[in-house]
Image 1 (cartoon, rainbow, N blue to C red):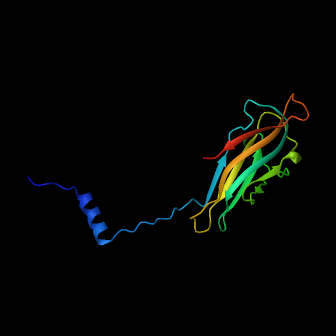
Image 2 (cartoon, rainbow, N blue to C red):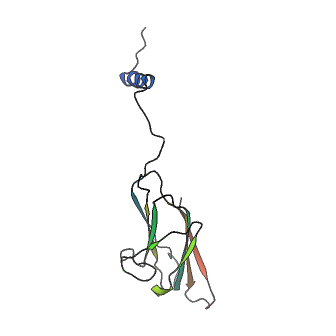
Image 3 (cartoon, rainbow, N blue to C red):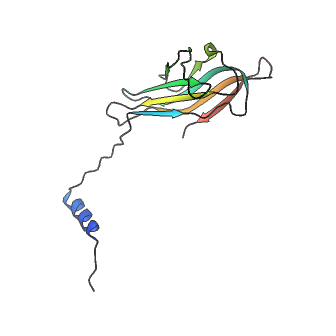
Length: 152
């Protein structure tokens, strides 16, 4: 009895044997990626939203990372209150952005993170974690809380 080899297997074997297929080992990223958080204050109420910490673990070549903040998930601001503005994330190892000029309080807080790959699209910035610091409503003036959000 003859063995039957499907045509795809034969073509694949021929291409590999003759070196007709080359595979790139480098990853290729989209040029821009945006992440929008869920409400970080879900189940909490803040008398003041104080600062936002980020841990930027890589910022290769000509890549970039920026962030915007919102209380409704549709209107976005920089930390200085500029509508449509953003903050550049440039400090490797982490930094804290003051949000006090926004004067925000309440039960809603969102961030939108934009990552731009290098021009050859083989490397992208990496943000390992973020943390929102706020003063809880009804707490003492010295009360200080934080919510951690880890990227996977």
